[in-house]
Length: 164
Image 1 (cartoon, one colour):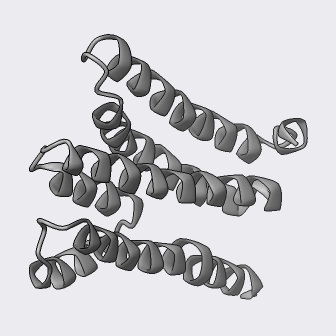
Image 2: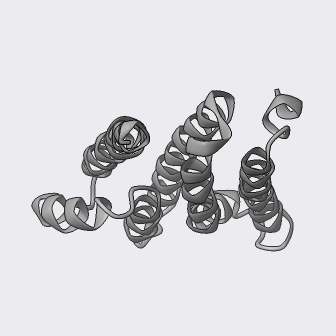
């Protein structure tokens, strides 16, 4: 699959951003494990900030790189959203009061630009002390982000390509 993606310049660019995204998650996880006294959840949650930017760029590049890269970008985006939720819930249970803030930043990156509308709209309505509130907030971000990156933007790109 990687060989097929790398046949074009846009495919190579996609693999570069996608590969960096994966490396960031691995490195931050190892740093959390080895240097921060086993704080893996914090390392993973912080990695979604940097990796999220790289993943969003790889999603955009995947529109020109082909269907296989687009599928890989979608899986990576979904995995990052799940990692952000899981690690923030672990941190919340461990008594970290800023877990919700880190989750918000991660989801803002992954759902840019619509996340900047959703976050301030939904956030004030929730009680951040509970796991269920964090899950609801995350779910709204995921639905909006998924619709943006994997329904509306591809539709816009297809229509733009069909224009003479």
